Image 1: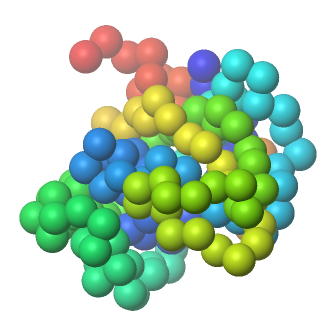
Image 2: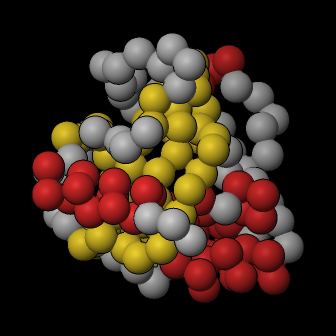
Length: 152
């Protein structure tokens, strides 16, 4: 399914969402609950923000080996200001109900978004991000569709 909405995430966390087997990042915490149903899963594009979380390399490798973390980040971690893939939003729950998930430090409040089925786009698609869960412009959706539907 071609996503109609996108979530902007600072690097390297955007990349970490697309490599959960390596980074163990299986979800995202937000202070707000998205206004979409999850049903059997809703695809969301992952947009790598133009800004970087400068402390992430140190914070993230505490969860997995430094080699695995750096390998994942080196794949797409330098890409900024572009849609780099998609994930499926499976569920949303209060952060207070989530304990001990690998790769997910628990904030005091907010919402945990359970994500899965990551797909990395062959080529990042440059576009401006926004705060919140935003609607992808039609021309960008067409580019995503072309990459997801292209034979390998």
